[in-house]
Amino acid sequence: MQPANRYTPPVDGQVRLLTKVARMYHERGIRQADIATALNISQAKVSRLLKRAVEVGIVRTTVMVAPGVHTALEDELQARFGLLDAVVVDVAQDDDESAVFSAIGAAAASYLEATLSGNDRIGISSWSQTLLAMVDRMRPFATRGAIEVVQLLGGIGVPDVQFQAQRLAGDLARVLGAEAVYVQAPGVVAERNIRDGLLRDAALTEVTRRWRELTMAIVGIGSIEPSDLLAVSGNAFPADDRRRLLAAGAVGDICHHVFTVDGDDVTGELGERTVAIPVDDFRAIPRRIGIAGGPRKHEPILGALAGGWVNVLVTDLRTAEALADAAGGGERDEHATTPGATAGA
Image (cartoon, rainbow, N blue to C red; front, side, top):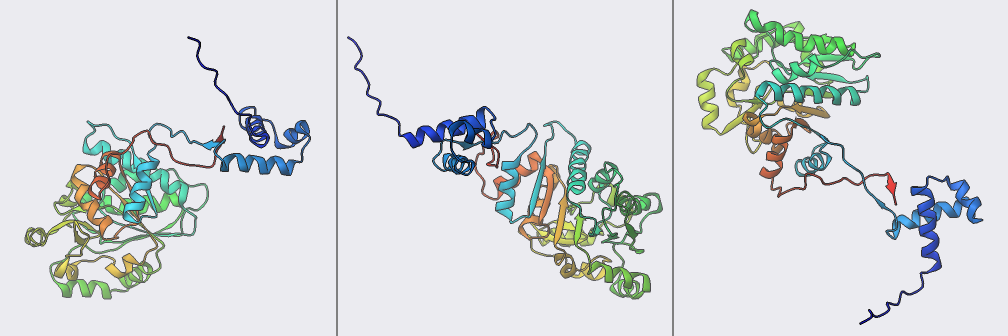
């Protein structure tokens, strides 16, 4: 039996013209002026036809996401946590903590190199291995990258490792062509009156004034159990304080301000013995960049995001997926594309 003939209605002349113009422009790369000449219509009409071709779906926009770029996941983190920006970097399944620090540090260095204006006043936390990895991967700026780099937390510690805290602020200032400002005090002292006495010193009074002028903070996100670097620095939380904080549900800290997984501040009286930027001054900084990752940091980062302690996050892929899932994200398409401005027929 012969198949029945199918009737195809005539194509509307306007649809045919839209399709023809779209293919000439997007597939064959013909300039709008030349399309106008070839079809004997105005260039303005060509422009209107191309716009209309997008509106009716003849031309659809597709961006091919490069391998190692996770814009859909970054957008999800921004939407779920109200972030200004998120940067997610690839890591291998079997990467150890050191390799994760290196990958995140490299991503943070690239982010800063692309976004610094030259007029920023930057605060930076001390005793962070991830931030050290970031600074180690930054290249000196040809022009000034920032005005100053100010420590946010006391940087004096055990002499053998104190240079790491000083080097962090100093090296970042050097590559940016900025002034380095140090906090010449320990991060944690034994009593409140010692802390108060230090803050009355003229040098620290000047530091506290500069804290209120910062436009950006670059911070690590710590866990209650200290990193190796912090543990040997002499600036880790004393054991009694750690026990109290854990009993209060603490999971992480930023500049020794301690919070739960819901982001609630549980620092308590420890804050009266800490030489660090005050909470209100820290939260007033417009751009607060948290740089952290790895399985040990999932809950601390979640708490930092939930409490609005940071509004920009640089982290690794596995951590980003865990954060999205914890915030209610479902399964995601790893090959999803992101809408953009480049059109193709």
